[in-house]
Length: 140
Image (cartoon, rainbow, N blue to C red; front, side, top):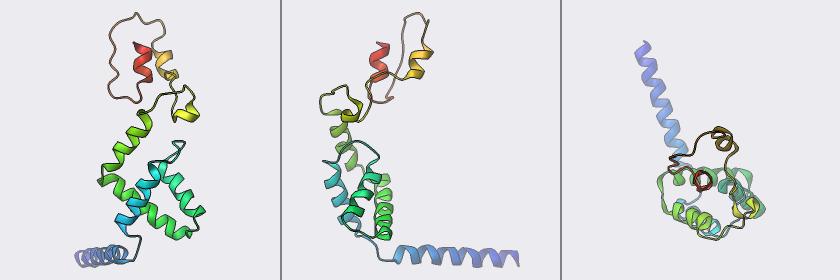
């Protein structure tokens, strides 16, 4: 009896997931193309999907359509890599101003790092791939 309920439950779940997948939604390639086109020139002030959702709403898209498109884009971000080059070119391919609001990140070392090494004798340190390099510059 328990075995039968488990099978019935599994069948219902699979049917539900297939039904959700079958529902019409934004064309994945068109959604990706529109997002990456926007992303190339968008301000680097906040999470890109949040900012893009705001843009879609301003363009007059219904809330449910915005949620579906952001869901599609979230999935695509995890399996596509062509957005990474766009991000790195925008974040690191321009001269820094020292103004976090314009640069998109702070150039000051982290307070945690500064506090952690107070009083420590100078020596070797390893900061491997920890971000923009602000802490590595401080350690140097």
